Length: 248
Image (cartoon, rainbow, N blue to C red; front, side):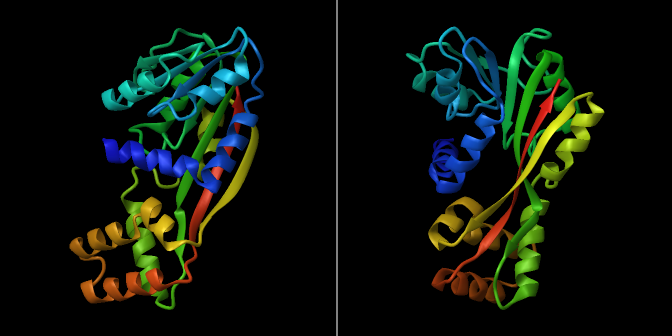
């Protein structure tokens, strides 16, 4: 779990991470006195930023199902005014009906069992006119540049196939409309990596190539040559990320 927390911290600290998180929070139109639910808050990466935006008088409730994430979020924000961390799942939030003014998820819905049910649950806890901000990738757009296009395509399909809800980014507006939300905005963001070490850390180029070999998707020698070319550079890899704001 330490590795997972480190991974999340690394991703959040990149230029890409800092930019999309800033945009995501800005889309929520936060003001002093509001109550915000950060659903799938992880180790509390964004709780402080949200608390600052709704101070004075506001409150932030971080929700996560993972005990290690909850422990780290509580440790990091033990002295942060207005922040509370609760154990809970997005399919059954530990929040009363119409009890929050704003809600957000960040790279959570790609992993959940039932995104439609989860979005409906968020609508339940939002007050009328409340805003729901979502930041989710579309892994079906993942691409890696290389002379061996076939291997790059096979690798990208393999990676997308490991994600429970690989097309969630593009699906958000439709799912929100079905849940009774009005969709305020949809912003696609190109996420590009041009440094091999960062791309390898965040996209798992080496790790996923090894998994693809084990799964019989790639031949060992072909995968090794492919990774070797990427490591020697230049590298261009990326996917599309979607920021969506919906109104309850």
